[in-house]
Length: 93
Image 1 (cartoon, one colour):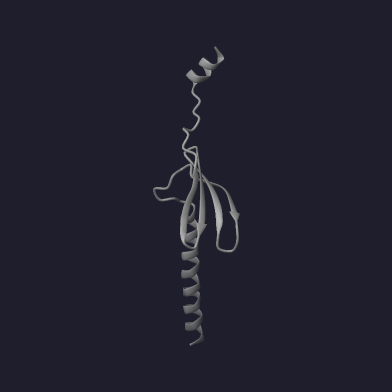
Image 2: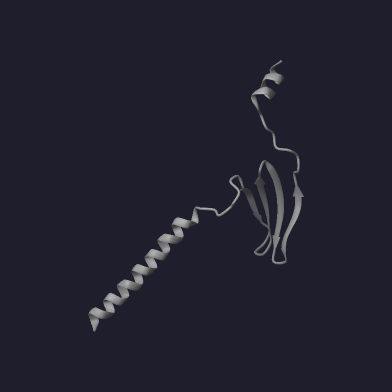
């Protein structure tokens, strides 16, 4: 009876360890997620409200997070700077 209980406990703990290992392994992967999505900074206003600055494809977005939802406060819609060899050569002339 004691051996059966120990084996059952070992099985449950092994299954739990396998699930934790799988979740940690999948945590770093993104499914169809953007490659250059980055949270620049997060400012906590109080326990329920905060501001978040996000950079995506070279553009900045300022979002307000509250229990009522997410509100976009500001968006920098200017085109991201791209430097090519032709642009560098033209600037050098």
